Image (cartoon, rainbow, N blue to C red; front, side, top):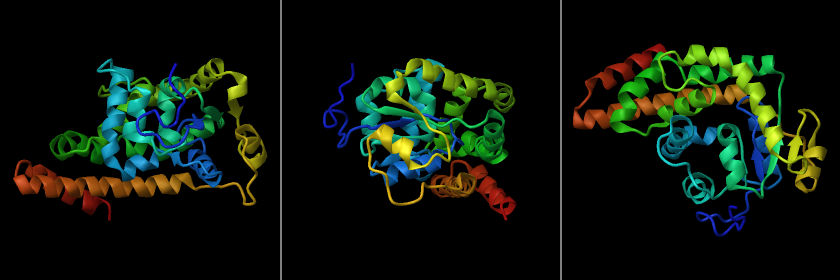
Length: 273
């Protein structure tokens, strides 16, 4: 069994307290904000947009889990590459729930389940456009192979692998066909795997009390966070796409090895106006 000693794993300075394993667009940003209010630093998928270099560890994890390439990350490797400063995990971490349950057996598990149709509307409108578009295709095919980091590769591998598409040409159509069944299966499998005393099925709108009782934390004297996740995702994805394309211009322009990137970046900037 993995050690629960906070200081023994990959430079970890604090215990891992919470695995918040609801899929993206199940109020993950609001839950992450709530954990922060409770004094627990939280890793959310937004971080990957800002710290693109962390995509390498996520791509390695996706390769091992979904494509049988390489070895799964150990607890020490998860900590060293991504999580050592955090006591809670949310959002994209849901795709590695089995690995994280094994790596952090001391952590409690929180699930937030939305109605499947409401979830799919939010996911298909808010997440998929940032994964599957001509602009992202350009980044994956031309920019990242030349100058990196491979963040878009990592995200497509994670979401595509978890939703059953692999890396084939029809990923988006397969996701549309599979997503609702995979969503239901996700919650069923976690509830079967996690002992009841370790699991909280949190209902949105129920406030601080059930969450704080489960986590053994005092109830804060502030409203429970409500984060506009859709607005944040759209803004940050646009910022990250622009930054990646302009980074490609600088990197490839320096070595004069792929002038198409310059043309593509100019096209992107015009189309985004």
